[in-house]
Length: 70
Image (cartoon, rainbow, N blue to C red):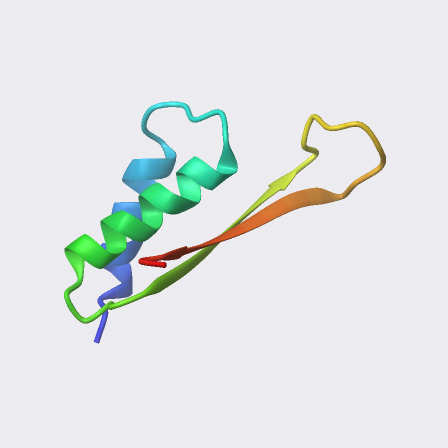
């Protein structure tokens, strides 16, 4: 099984680390880190949702899902 406390720590370190300009990059980095840290995770689907994204139009959020490895 996956230790969710450890998984959270891995994700938190990535999210609070250096700035990324694309949520796709963040999702991919999280997926790669989790599959590297936990051998039992063979494929990860990571969804990142960004509220109030700076895009034209009225949107509640933008969202992307990345699957690693593809």
